Image (cartoon, rainbow, N blue to C red; front, side, top):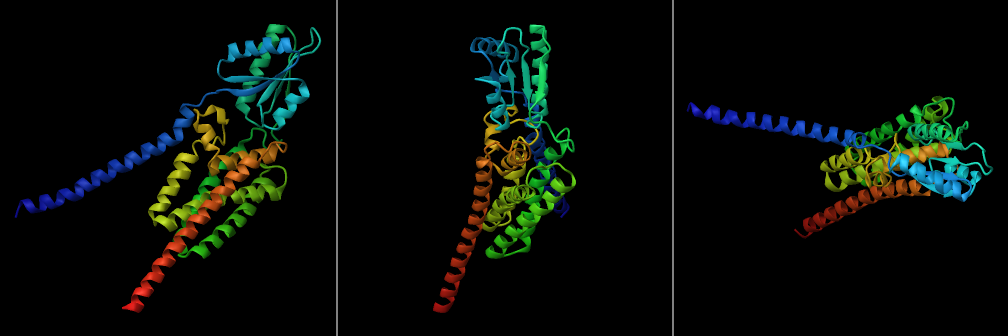
Length: 337
């Protein structure tokens, strides 16, 4: 009789310890997910154009490669206008323009709106070129941040709320609505309302986004539904565990490698490139390009977001079809019986 309470009492204690250890492990995983990209972050193969006479370009390219190591990847271009075009299309982060005449001072082109850290690196290179040539090197910011957001803090800070908002909407829709068609309707309505509201805050109020208000609103809405729809679809297909799977996918895997605040090249390869195939990365890239790089090709991020949104809706429809089949079979058996 005396040992029974101890034996039965040991089970809750063991369960409590196991839960505590499991919770600590989850915290550790979350910490690793969010800090690993920052800890391993360093410039790698940042594309930079070098324009000017062929011989001078070859010489400077060698010097830059020797000094910067693997941080920069110099790309020769024919002339200054080509370098500017490459910057505006987000093919390179900046450029070194060499004078065509002997003694002509070089010029360094930067794009602060692409990334301030890379712009600072190129400014340091400009100072080194000035020391080597003894000439005053001009630094030109081809794509600066807007005066309303001189450090780009607003556009960078918008990335995480989009992820969190997409997840929160998915949870609410999944739990509050029990059937497929109303869930899809709710997703569309949430994307429209969220896109207009957040664009109103970020574009019209804070001045963190630029360009067309309606295009920005569409991009935000599509980003939200590209995050929320797969979670709703997984919930419909797998039940409540589907929400956990979707949350882990978007928050712990996709968000840390989204390159929302740092260049893709700063993230350990190939994770930076992989991050652009997920909604958080594609959405952050799309908003930056719509605001500051209207000449950039945005087909890829638009496509990524559309595919994720469509995949989420498809999962919801598959789950609905499966449930309908089960109901029909049950009714048929009941009729036969």
